[in-house]
Image (cartoon, rainbow, N blue to C red; front, top):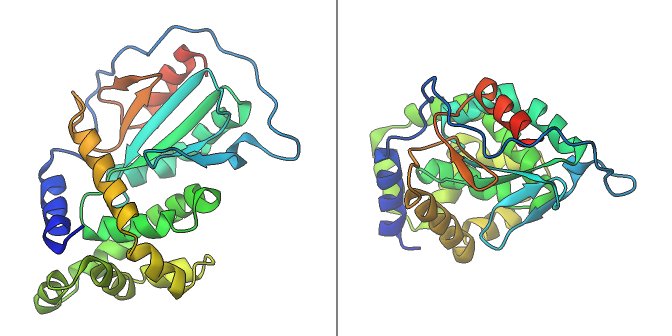
Length: 247
């Protein structure tokens, strides 16, 4: 991905009417299944520890054969995604533990800061992805405060860098590199992840796919058994639909 491509990515994504809370009228559940019983996980594990990556770049937690499949599009710089993570993730994982629900997270990258944090969250692969994502949300306010405090000249300098160097510089300025190192990702591995063109292209493609979906207006967006849930950005609105679907 070129420098111009990266900057265009940020501008186009931020222009989308996304990262907003839904209205009060949620759509009907994907189906009306009755609640299912629990499914035993592999020996010595919980379903929340069973994580794999899809060909398109999403990360799936839980029973791959779960009858109820939930997809979330999220952005690490979206405050409403942070709110959902804080209020809903622990409760959502209780459903995953039953083996009746799988959760796939797809990153929707909105800007260079988001790209930097997202590449870090994905750098060590499936095993640490969900924990890194939750912990990145915990750091979101601190990171956004730091970026607002950067001098304009420094922001202009960043725009002149190639993508990998831009991500590396942003990570150092915002403390994202220290966040990664404290979680077992050394600088050498970070540099590889920041320079991974295939990973960047995959994230851009994931964003493009979301933008082309009818009804997609931003993050968080949930898809339940193949059906996009409109105006469903909070746990209180999502949980009844999970129950009705059989989770």
